[in-house]
Image 1 (tube, one colour):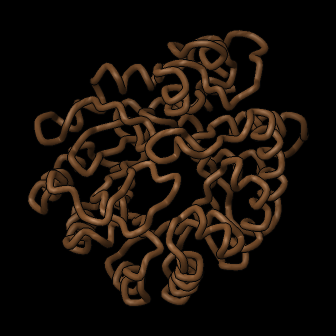
Image 2 (cartoon, rainbow, N blue to C red; image 1 turned 90 degrees about the horizontal axis):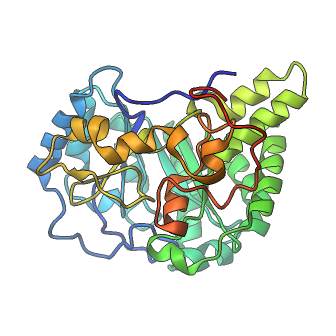
Image 3 (cartoon, rainbow, N blue to C red; image 1 turned 180 degrees about the horizontal axis):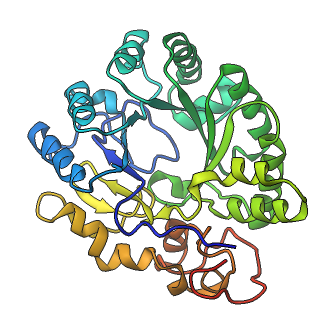
Length: 360
């Protein structure tokens, strides 16, 4: 069985934190956002130079995700989208569920050529969602925004935190996401960084049970289901496909083109001040776009090169026969041990035999 790809030439997705400013106070915020912009964030001209640098990766260009904070708090967001589209980037945006996210904002995003946006729902009810988001009314604003996206023909995905606080509500959230017409439901498995360190992660056993439930849901009508910081979902999907003769369709739906993608391998994150990191959940920097060569930082820095070589991972992740397609969450390994190459503690799988290099 061929292993997952190694993205040496270019990342598949680039996440640019265009600002840390946000009017929410989410209990699990990776960015530890604040109401006002950081005076050190990249300015308009620096933003355009960043887009020029990213274009040097060449075709096929990475997919550019503008995130935050709340991108709508950045004054030049729409000129940045226009500049990115002019350079050939597919662009997605991750706005926050605040009063800034109006029907007019949705129409402007659609008219600007944004490919998709992401919304966040961390509860199936207003009480549960707003408790995590820290601002009353966020739940209803998010539902309204989803309906506005559907009316404007703007595809959207719904992001949901997976933690002890949300685990029992996930099936209800899935039902709600399905009624809204979301293209994708993406589950973000808690990594204890930023304000997320005050929340409780689920156990490895609970994660395994949840993966099986998600695969059951993926076989039904409704949004495609993906995970963030839980690449061992791919291993569970592959195991199930192996148990079911003639089931390649399910494996493709659950794993698809994401095989091998993880922090630093197919993913690059650029902070609001220009730090180049493997992901937003792994705040280790290879350099800064203000002083370094962005393309070379991704292709040649010791940090990114190490994260792209699963055979160098420690513990079970390095021995695992699924290491290339999965590789574990490098962010969670770092949060748990201080070593981004350590094993992922959310996975309970015991490797059968060490994998030959480049194979799973």
